[in-house]
Length: 513
Image 1 (cartoon, helix red, strand yellow):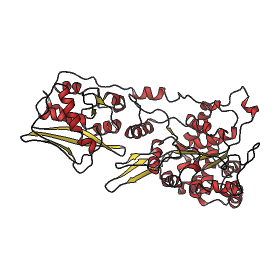
Image 2 (cartoon, one colour):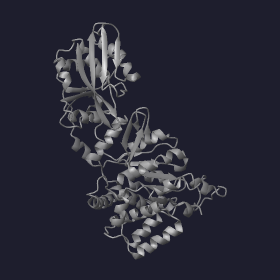
Image 3 (tube, one colour):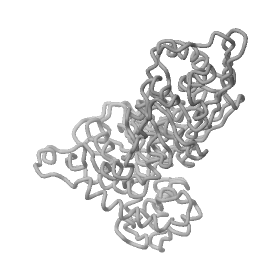
Image 4 (cartoon, helix red, strand yellow):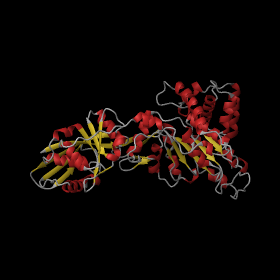
């Protein structure tokens, strides 16, 4: 008897529906075809054990399982459950096998029939609704994640027996109900850290406020213990809250990568990723036989923090250059090319020299001549050009550390950032995919960032003295536009340009002399 069940395979951040055809006929041996990888081939052993453990019988005749379309490679163990249900249906052990065509079924089986969680439940649910399936059956741990999709009945199951009883009409599973909007909006501002924890460093807070308001990249340069990491960790607390669309995009990426906690639903805060400097190229930008998202995609709509930037391998840093410009990364393989979104804010930190104390007000630098410039040259000029704000972080004095009063809170800073973003949202309402000053095109730059004669003279002197590139010129204009937005000014004034220019003072010629 031939039975069809339906599963799903995740490619990139999208899902493709897979038809699992199971045929039991005269003959011997089990066959699984349709470009399965080793994990899929091994599924028949898990399926057989799970079926026998639940007092059902595995066919002893010829069994053929075909995963269609047969020209797409299938990977992972999440096809165990639809294969098991297909085998039971084909061997006439289900009372209502005709209902199988209404559901997408996914899950990994243990030998005793328990169902383990899978990756990519959210994109699978979105695709199931798009193709008009009545419902989706997934492991209990993935039910809330898949339940975010409306107009689709999502059932969470924890054992093969529940699925068998459901398709035999012996048990009615209860669909998962998730109040997406209530859960999402209630948890958006619940942070464990706050900018008022930081003593002093008002100029750095101001730089990060500008970065948050315009979506700009920034690098913090200062000695050990000056507070670079502490400040960077608090940046997500002043960013505008995620919109529902951004949250859905972000959740899909984390779901595909298997980074969502069990029983979680929508991601409600902007992601903050901080990979170690030993990270590989593929781990940072994505890769693998079947490409998976890397750290830059996991930081989509959030912050990517690279601590001790010069310690990262040069090749790792260079592969970020194109994704930073295009806000997406394309991973190409012989048979497949996948796009992953990568719209992130880059915040980097570094010591000013190998010993860490160059330009320190109290400690003396012990590095030999030329070491400071050599250390800074580990970061290529093109990458530094793509970083809008170069901020020097100085140590906090004892007087500031001992102050009992708290500084400005994240909520107060966030209010100003949101107001500036609202101005930008109105400005770019007719521009597809652009919502912040850092993303404006060259054409928009000439139209929006118009400066007066005094501003042009100031910018010319800065370009000549700091030996800045054309890209750095564009960055200064974008940052000055953000400074103007924060002050509520419609025009870019000389003081806005001056503040933007000071954040390029750590360029190569300007820093180590």
